[in-house]
Every structure is written in C-alpha cells, then in structure tokens.
Length: 270
Image (cartoon, rainbow, N blue to C red):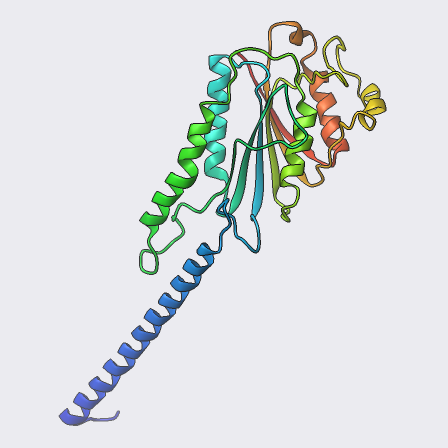
C-alpha cells in the first residue's frame, strides 16, 4: 500500500477535483450541444409544423361524413374517439381532418392539417424546456383540434353523400408524404349516394355491380398500406334496410381492393 504525505494528499485531492470538474464540464457541453441540435431541428419546420426536409413521421387522416346529422349520443362517441386520436398522434405525425359535404370538389381542403409538434413529455428539464413545449403543443395543436370538432356535425341532411369521392380526394391531398405509417378514420353511415353510384335501394349493395362501374365512375382509390377504422353511424330510416353485416362486407371488399386493411368497425347507435 502506498503512503502519501499530507502535502501529497492535498495535491492528489486537487488533481481528483480537477478531473471531476473536467468531466462535469464535458457533460454540460454535450448537453448544450444536444439542446442546440434539438432546437435547431425543431426550427426547421414548415407551415404545418412538419419537418421541412423529412416530412411527417406518420399520416393520420380523419374523414367525417357531414352529409347527415348525428344525434347527441352518436356525436359524443365521435368526439371522444377524435379526442383520443389527438393524443395518439406521435410527435411530427400529421393529423388531417376532412369534412364530406354534398358539393365535394376534386380538390378537398382539410378543416385541419398540422403535425404534432410534441407535448414536451420526452424532453429533459436539464437540457430543454418541457413546459414551454407543452404550452406550444396545447396552443398550436390541441386547441385547434378541439375547436374544429364543434363545427363538423351538420344540422340538416344533404341530397348527396360522396363518401368514395371524399376518400379519393383526401388520399390525393396527403398522398405525397413518404411514410409507411398511414391511418384513416372514417366517420360515416357508409351510405354512398351520388348520381354515379348509390347504396339506396340496393339491399345490400352488390360489390360485383360496383366493380363494373367503379373504373368508369372513377370511384376507386389507391390506399396501399393504409389501415382503416370506421365509426359506423346506424340510422333508423331507409338506411336501416341497407345497413348491417353485408353492408360492412361491401366496404371491407372496397378497402381490400384499394390495398387497405379494414382494422376495425365500431357501430355508434343512437
């Protein structure tokens, strides 16, 4: 065992203290560097709060069929699901909300289209400002979603329900984003009704007949790789004679032919 004089011990303590301070300084520099990198990356966002160069990390599309009103119970189910979805979109994931109206144009403009800037939960209090990030998240992402939900339910039924055309148009709007994580939430009674093709009077709709007019009527959509969830609004009028298991089977075939996977159908009754 080595023995040190009091003077040597003092010098050794100074040496160890210097090492410790040097290590601490390196940690601080590394933390500052990481913070600068994260902050500079967060500033390279486009007008939709998406990464300007890489684009969204995922795409989450909501299509609300607003051609027929939802009763209070149904709309509460819709709102609850959309509020949950808002929390599920990951950081830099795009959320786009579309409303289907009878006067649908080929170019469908979203009611809401923003990337989630992140709530700050993943940030360290030592190298960043989680509270500032959370306030930005609530102001720029959460509040606008909550606001738009109050405007989507219609008061009066419309004469046309171009659901398939809306799916096409929404797909065209977000189709340029290069991401493998693509999800569609469709809120609708699924009663397609236009001059080209209608589910009224077709109890249940015949998919083979649909296929014969789909190409000519431009009703097909390329949804390769998409996962689909449907909130299926049940009706009590003429729609009730069409809706049911075989009606859902029709849409299952529609999405399968489009390259998508129908993951879930939840009926919302009222």
